[in-house]
Image 1: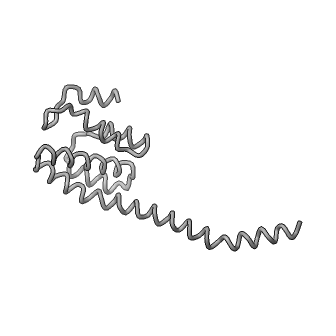
Image 2: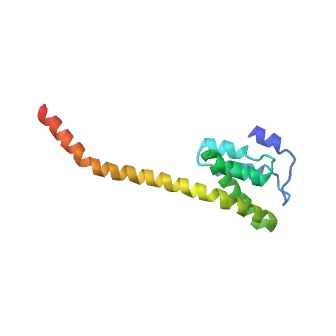
Image 3: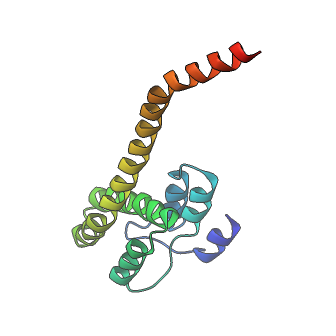
Length: 137
């Protein structure tokens, strides 16, 4: 937190609010400590479109998830403040990042349901195995 506070000391956003409020919001949107800390430290200055493409191509789930949280917060702020040029920029970035987040969520759900299906399929085999073990005692 101290690093983020020092990095954004005295900075104001387009609406005149302290810039630190945005990294704090992105950090608080994190689902675990790693995402929260990364969210606090996420704002770096570089070519925005290249930055988004690098994150998308990295397959780094932490970076993708934090960027997703970042974009959602930026869109909310941009729409509320009427900053439509920034909203358009973030919508383009979200179109790159959001499918990656959704695909990851679908893979996780698929693996979880596969695990449940496998357990149901293997249950009769386990029962037969346990019964044969008990008979040999």
